Image (tube, rainbow, N blue to C red):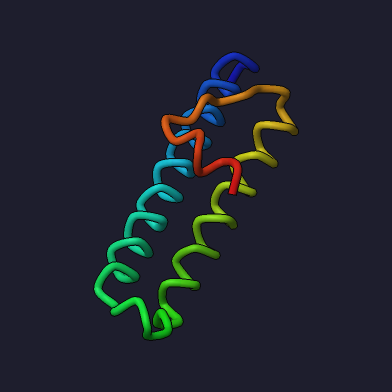
Length: 80
């Protein structure tokens, strides 16, 4: 496998990690929306948010190691 193929595969992996992070954030938002504002959010909301952060951190780590940047379709979530 040449370097170009490896880089392409890792870029695809990073895109998938970002997509999974987006799905986790969406799930957290849906769960939080079902709770009245005066109630505490269920612990699953925080768990989904933490999973999203972990997935994005993994993607960013891979991107940094191979010297690429995979543009995300969800830039607002990269800041959080």
